Image (cartoon, rainbow, N blue to C red; front, side, top):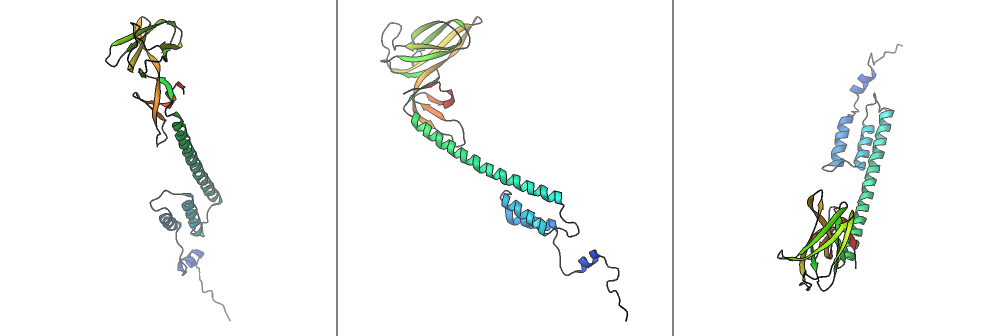
Length: 240
């Protein structure tokens, strides 16, 4: 009795092609997984892992996944998970920072600060202390104080000064020795540098009325009574 080879010259590819078991291409499997996992959202670590598993399940049996490529994908998944964890940590730190800002802000309301500015609300029954920023050594610094109408009230000669902050005190009196009325006054300091008259920055006291906290991580802003806002980083001194 003879035995006949019924397969003839069929190759493995022919057998797979004629088989009733159909394989799904990796590309189709990945597209399906991506559609189910991501939708309209960004690709996260869970979706990435699902895509990787789908790719392995639908790989071509004649050309299986290369070991090097598989390890590289695992490394990408590990990096993605690490970045996700880092983002969560940074978000937590940002939340703690905002809480710290709020606590800091509540302690500043009602307190006196010294910050750069040209105007100050003055109670002339008391002395006012401030300073002038001198960029380099000069032969003389003049401080002119004017009222809300622009009228000169007092001129103070600070004399020669070295580079730094030159302190001054105004006793609330005008040039005639009379007590000036309480109100908002403008302080203008000038000096001669390289034969030219130069306006200098003045640091003046003010009372913190309220505080503005940025919702986007910006700097804390102090709202000064009658004088507008100033960034906390510009404050020179915080008093009682």
